[in-house]
Image 1: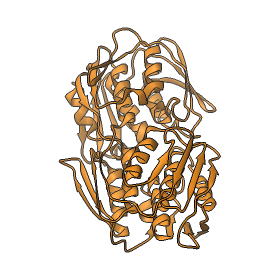
Image 2: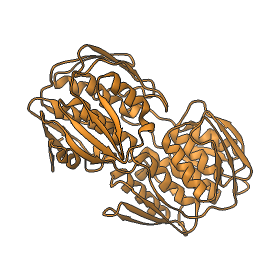
Image 3: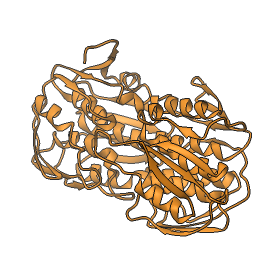
Length: 425
């Protein structure tokens, strides 16, 4: 397995281009199942999760061509040969369940493996299934699979309230409702920018969706949808990760391009409270820190609150603060798995229930550490950037699921950072 080796102590300076958003690209790739003909996605990041989704679409019968040099993916789903998403593919990535809504809406039936749990806690799909049942689907669970059927061959518009905001659930029901007969009204929807991006795509295809980005959406179903050509928005979590990297390392001055600053308001507010300068400069967002880090308390929440996907990276910034910070995780029940690795590097962190109590230290010591999930791996790389000595972050296949060429981008900013092929662990 590969590892990322970091030698700390170098300030980050220069410009970095933020890649397309993984969490927008994945549901949009699934949305190609809703139309005949080739769709073109541009600004698609070269990530493992994109490759996994492409493999699933090919299994279903789509023609998928990925051009990593131009960051484009072309998908033609005219002749689907299967309506089943097998466990062997779904287990690699939970977002694979997003083919359920499109398959059921367009073909009247679908068989999709349950994704199970993951390293950061269980994330059930019950809201997906309840929403589809409200639209008339008959659903049964059989040997680890969801088997769904629209008895009349087509779903019907319905009123449905999510028990809690769920990004994947909202996306699945949106795609299903786009081809349903009649109007669907959804309450308590997720409000993430990626939801708005999916709605933009579906409307380009001919759907009629109003209210994306708010907690209430109205969707008027249409008879058919058309292919599309679209450039995906920049990845706000990747942008936030580089913001935290610049904040953690003394003397850093980094400019990010392609960032929608409004999508990161909660993170930017907390970084500024911590003494980090974040400001818009033309087409760039500039992040720099000259003085000490101030302690800040953070509680994760659904968008527009502080993103759970930024908790691990911001926690590393707080290990540099002069005083005590409290990080409270409200979204997932097992998302402090990076903390034991940070303790090995000399961090002072105590877990109390769903909160991490962080006492700032002057520096960390480089060590061999193990990535446990996508965002945890990024946080350990950031920790290595300001640690004394050498840090080796192992199992970075997690990192490759969501960050495009991270070691190359950091090296271009002046970090001593490289990928080590075939590292143990």
